[in-house]
Amino acid sequence: MSLFTILPAVDIMYGQAVQLVRGVPGSEKIFGDPFEAARRWRQAGAEWIHLVDLDAAFGRTPNSAVAARIVAELGLKVELTGGVRDAAQLEAALATGCARVNLGTAVLENPEWAAAAVAGDPERVAIALDVKEGQLAARGWTTRAGQIDQLVEPLTAAGCRRFVVTDVDSDGVLQGPNLALLRHVAALTDAKVTASGGIASLDDLRALRGLSDLGVDSAIIGTALYLGAFSLPQALAAVAEPGADRDQND
Image 1 (cartoon, rainbow, N blue to C red):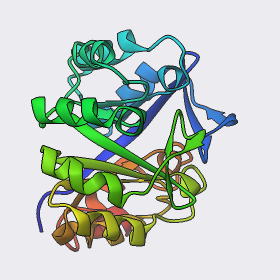
Image 2: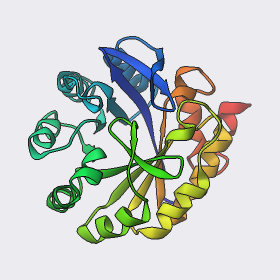
Image 3: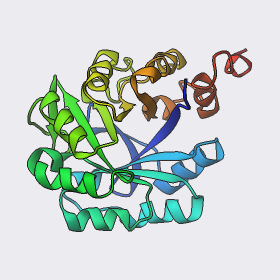
Protein backbone atom coordinates (compact mmCIF):
# COMPACT_ATOMS: atom_id res chain seq x y z
CA MET A 1 0.00 0.00 0.00
CA SER A 2 1.16 3.57 -0.68
CA LEU A 3 1.58 6.43 1.77
CA PHE A 4 -1.68 7.53 3.39
CA THR A 5 -1.92 11.21 4.40
CA ILE A 6 -3.78 12.65 7.39
CA LEU A 7 -5.01 16.25 7.13
CA PRO A 8 -6.20 17.78 10.42
CA ALA A 9 -9.03 20.22 9.72
CA VAL A 10 -8.96 23.86 10.76
CA ASP A 11 -12.33 25.44 9.98
CA ILE A 12 -12.43 29.23 10.34
CA MET A 13 -15.53 31.27 11.11
CA TYR A 14 -15.54 34.82 12.53
CA GLY A 15 -11.85 34.51 13.34
CA GLN A 16 -12.20 31.30 15.36
CA ALA A 17 -11.38 27.66 14.73
CA VAL A 18 -14.71 25.84 14.81
CA GLN A 19 -16.32 22.51 13.99
CA LEU A 20 -19.86 22.47 12.63
CA VAL A 21 -22.29 19.57 12.98
CA ARG A 22 -23.46 18.47 9.52
CA GLY A 23 -22.44 21.90 8.20
CA VAL A 24 -25.22 23.74 10.04
CA PRO A 25 -24.39 27.31 11.18
CA GLY A 26 -25.13 27.74 14.86
CA SER A 27 -24.10 24.15 15.65
CA GLU A 28 -20.42 24.99 15.95
CA LYS A 29 -18.02 24.06 18.71
CA ILE A 30 -15.36 26.76 19.13
CA PHE A 31 -11.68 25.88 19.51
CA GLY A 32 -9.92 29.25 19.59
CA ASP A 33 -7.31 30.87 17.35
CA PRO A 34 -7.03 29.02 14.00
CA PHE A 35 -3.31 29.79 13.68
CA GLU A 36 -2.66 28.26 17.10
CA ALA A 37 -4.76 25.24 16.14
CA ALA A 38 -2.60 24.78 13.05
CA ARG A 39 0.55 25.22 15.15
CA ARG A 40 -0.59 22.45 17.53
CA TRP A 41 -1.18 20.07 14.64
CA ARG A 42 2.25 20.94 13.22
CA GLN A 43 3.89 20.21 16.56
CA ALA A 44 2.00 16.90 16.75
CA GLY A 45 3.39 15.77 13.41
CA ALA A 46 1.08 17.13 10.71
CA GLU A 47 2.54 17.94 7.31
CA TRP A 48 -0.80 18.99 5.80
CA ILE A 49 -3.73 21.08 7.08
CA HIS A 50 -7.22 21.11 5.58
CA LEU A 51 -8.16 24.78 6.00
CA VAL A 52 -11.86 25.51 5.55
CA ASP A 53 -12.78 29.17 5.11
CA LEU A 54 -16.40 29.10 6.25
CA ASP A 55 -16.65 32.87 6.08
CA ALA A 56 -15.78 32.79 2.38
CA ALA A 57 -18.13 29.85 1.85
CA PHE A 58 -21.02 31.85 3.32
CA GLY A 59 -20.16 34.97 1.30
CA ARG A 60 -18.24 36.90 3.95
CA THR A 61 -14.68 38.28 3.79
CA PRO A 62 -12.15 35.48 3.12
CA ASN A 63 -9.50 34.58 5.70
CA SER A 64 -6.67 34.71 3.17
CA ALA A 65 -4.25 36.34 5.61
CA VAL A 66 -4.64 33.44 8.06
CA ALA A 67 -3.90 30.91 5.33
CA ALA A 68 -0.85 32.85 4.17
CA ARG A 69 0.49 33.11 7.72
CA ILE A 70 0.10 29.37 8.33
CA VAL A 71 2.05 28.63 5.14
CA ALA A 72 4.76 31.21 5.78
CA GLU A 73 5.35 30.71 9.51
CA LEU A 74 4.55 27.03 10.06
CA GLY A 75 5.74 25.54 6.78
CA LEU A 76 2.61 23.43 6.50
CA LYS A 77 1.10 22.29 3.23
CA VAL A 78 -2.36 23.84 3.19
CA GLU A 79 -5.37 22.52 1.32
CA LEU A 80 -7.66 25.56 1.18
CA THR A 81 -11.37 25.24 0.59
CA GLY A 82 -14.41 27.50 0.80
CA GLY A 83 -15.84 30.29 -1.34
CA VAL A 84 -13.63 30.01 -4.45
CA ARG A 85 -16.12 30.55 -7.27
CA ASP A 86 -14.36 32.55 -9.98
CA ALA A 87 -10.94 33.25 -11.47
CA ALA A 88 -10.17 36.22 -9.21
CA GLN A 89 -11.01 34.26 -6.06
CA LEU A 90 -8.92 31.31 -7.25
CA GLU A 91 -5.96 33.58 -7.95
CA ALA A 92 -6.25 35.12 -4.47
CA ALA A 93 -6.46 31.68 -2.86
CA LEU A 94 -3.40 30.39 -4.72
CA ALA A 95 -1.52 33.58 -3.81
CA THR A 96 -1.61 32.55 -0.14
CA GLY A 97 1.00 29.94 -1.02
CA CYS A 98 -1.29 27.02 -0.25
CA ALA A 99 -0.42 23.71 -1.82
CA ARG A 100 -3.93 23.05 -3.12
CA VAL A 101 -7.26 24.83 -3.57
CA ASN A 102 -10.55 22.93 -3.66
CA LEU A 103 -13.39 24.05 -5.90
CA GLY A 104 -16.87 23.14 -4.66
CA THR A 105 -19.86 25.34 -5.44
CA ALA A 106 -18.17 26.62 -8.62
CA VAL A 107 -18.21 23.09 -10.03
CA LEU A 108 -21.99 23.05 -9.83
CA GLU A 109 -22.68 26.65 -10.80
CA ASN A 110 -19.97 27.20 -13.41
CA PRO A 111 -18.79 23.74 -14.51
CA GLU A 112 -17.02 24.87 -17.68
CA TRP A 113 -14.85 27.36 -15.77
CA ALA A 114 -14.14 24.80 -13.04
CA ALA A 115 -13.05 22.21 -15.59
CA ALA A 116 -10.77 24.76 -17.25
CA ALA A 117 -9.30 25.75 -13.86
CA VAL A 118 -8.50 22.13 -13.06
CA ALA A 119 -7.01 21.54 -16.48
CA GLY A 120 -4.86 24.66 -16.10
CA ASP A 121 -3.24 23.57 -12.82
CA PRO A 122 -4.21 20.00 -11.91
CA GLU A 123 -1.59 19.73 -9.15
CA ARG A 124 -2.94 22.72 -7.20
CA VAL A 125 -6.64 22.72 -8.09
CA ALA A 126 -8.84 19.89 -6.83
CA ILE A 127 -12.58 19.24 -6.77
CA ALA A 128 -14.59 19.09 -3.55
CA LEU A 129 -17.64 16.84 -3.68
CA ASP A 130 -19.87 17.60 -0.69
CA VAL A 131 -22.64 15.01 -0.52
CA LYS A 132 -25.79 15.56 1.52
CA GLU A 133 -28.64 13.04 1.55
CA GLY A 134 -27.22 11.43 -1.57
CA GLN A 135 -26.92 14.63 -3.61
CA LEU A 136 -24.17 17.16 -4.14
CA ALA A 137 -24.44 20.19 -1.87
CA ALA A 138 -23.36 23.77 -2.59
CA ARG A 139 -23.24 27.24 -1.05
CA GLY A 140 -21.83 26.16 2.29
CA TRP A 141 -23.89 22.94 2.13
CA THR A 142 -27.16 24.92 2.16
CA THR A 143 -28.46 23.85 -1.26
CA ARG A 144 -28.54 20.56 -3.15
CA ALA A 145 -27.63 20.40 -6.80
CA GLY A 146 -27.05 17.31 -8.87
CA GLN A 147 -25.72 13.78 -8.85
CA ILE A 148 -22.14 12.67 -8.25
CA ASP A 149 -21.79 10.61 -11.43
CA GLN A 150 -22.68 13.59 -13.63
CA LEU A 151 -19.61 15.48 -12.45
CA VAL A 152 -16.91 12.97 -11.62
CA GLU A 153 -16.50 11.44 -15.06
CA PRO A 154 -16.31 14.70 -17.10
CA LEU A 155 -14.02 16.34 -14.54
CA THR A 156 -11.74 13.32 -14.64
CA ALA A 157 -11.67 13.66 -18.41
CA ALA A 158 -10.79 17.35 -17.96
CA GLY A 159 -7.72 16.37 -15.97
CA CYS A 160 -8.82 16.37 -12.33
CA ARG A 161 -6.29 14.47 -10.24
CA ARG A 162 -8.03 14.68 -6.85
CA PHE A 163 -11.57 14.61 -5.48
CA VAL A 164 -12.15 15.58 -1.85
CA VAL A 165 -15.31 13.75 -0.82
CA THR A 166 -17.24 14.93 2.24
CA ASP A 167 -20.25 13.06 3.56
CA VAL A 168 -22.07 16.06 5.06
CA ASP A 169 -24.56 13.86 6.91
CA SER A 170 -21.78 12.35 9.00
CA ASP A 171 -19.62 15.45 9.33
CA GLY A 172 -19.01 16.42 12.95
CA VAL A 173 -21.13 13.63 14.46
CA LEU A 174 -18.50 10.89 14.87
CA GLN A 175 -20.61 8.12 13.36
CA GLY A 176 -17.99 6.66 11.02
CA PRO A 177 -17.00 7.43 7.42
CA ASN A 178 -19.26 6.63 4.48
CA LEU A 179 -17.19 3.85 2.94
CA ALA A 180 -19.82 3.03 0.32
CA LEU A 181 -19.75 6.62 -0.96
CA LEU A 182 -15.97 6.59 -1.18
CA ARG A 183 -15.94 3.28 -3.02
CA HIS A 184 -18.52 4.65 -5.46
CA VAL A 185 -16.52 7.78 -6.25
CA ALA A 186 -13.27 5.83 -6.53
CA ALA A 187 -14.90 3.46 -9.04
CA LEU A 188 -15.80 6.42 -11.29
CA THR A 189 -12.31 7.92 -11.58
CA ASP A 190 -8.61 7.18 -11.66
CA ALA A 191 -7.98 10.38 -9.69
CA LYS A 192 -6.99 10.20 -6.03
CA VAL A 193 -9.72 10.51 -3.41
CA THR A 194 -9.54 12.26 -0.03
CA ALA A 195 -12.10 11.12 2.55
CA SER A 196 -13.85 13.55 4.88
CA GLY A 197 -16.66 13.23 7.41
CA GLY A 198 -17.55 10.96 10.30
CA ILE A 199 -14.14 9.66 11.37
CA ALA A 200 -14.50 8.72 15.04
CA SER A 201 -11.89 6.06 15.83
CA LEU A 202 -8.58 4.55 14.82
CA ASP A 203 -10.51 1.62 13.38
CA ASP A 204 -12.25 4.10 11.03
CA LEU A 205 -8.82 5.22 9.84
CA ARG A 206 -7.71 1.64 9.32
CA ALA A 207 -10.86 1.01 7.26
CA LEU A 208 -10.05 4.02 5.09
CA ARG A 209 -6.45 2.85 4.75
CA GLY A 210 -7.91 -0.39 3.44
CA LEU A 211 -9.34 1.54 0.47
CA SER A 212 -5.89 2.69 -0.64
CA ASP A 213 -5.81 0.24 -3.53
CA LEU A 214 -8.98 1.89 -4.87
CA GLY A 215 -7.36 5.33 -4.85
CA VAL A 216 -8.38 6.65 -1.43
CA ASP A 217 -5.03 7.99 -0.24
CA SER A 218 -5.85 10.52 2.48
CA ALA A 219 -8.35 11.55 5.15
CA ILE A 220 -9.43 14.80 6.77
CA ILE A 221 -10.05 14.64 10.52
CA GLY A 222 -11.70 17.37 12.55
CA THR A 223 -14.00 16.76 15.49
CA ALA A 224 -12.40 13.48 16.64
CA LEU A 225 -9.02 15.18 17.03
CA TYR A 226 -10.41 18.29 18.71
CA LEU A 227 -12.43 16.26 21.21
CA GLY A 228 -9.54 13.89 21.95
CA ALA A 229 -11.00 10.64 20.62
CA PHE A 230 -7.40 9.87 19.64
CA SER A 231 -4.22 11.86 19.14
CA LEU A 232 -2.69 12.89 15.86
CA PRO A 233 0.40 10.69 16.47
CA GLN A 234 -1.96 7.73 17.02
CA ALA A 235 -3.80 8.59 13.79
CA LEU A 236 -0.56 8.79 11.84
CA ALA A 237 0.55 5.45 13.24
CA ALA A 238 -2.80 3.81 12.48
CA VAL A 239 -2.47 4.53 8.75
CA ALA A 240 1.19 3.61 8.55
CA GLU A 241 2.36 0.09 7.77
CA PRO A 242 0.24 -2.65 9.43
CA GLY A 243 1.14 -3.08 13.08
CA ALA A 244 3.01 0.23 13.32
CA ASP A 245 0.44 1.67 15.73
CA ARG A 246 0.77 -1.01 18.41
CA ASP A 247 3.20 0.91 20.58
CA GLN A 248 0.92 3.95 20.44
CA ASN A 249 -2.03 1.98 21.83
CA ASP A 250 -0.42 -0.45 24.31
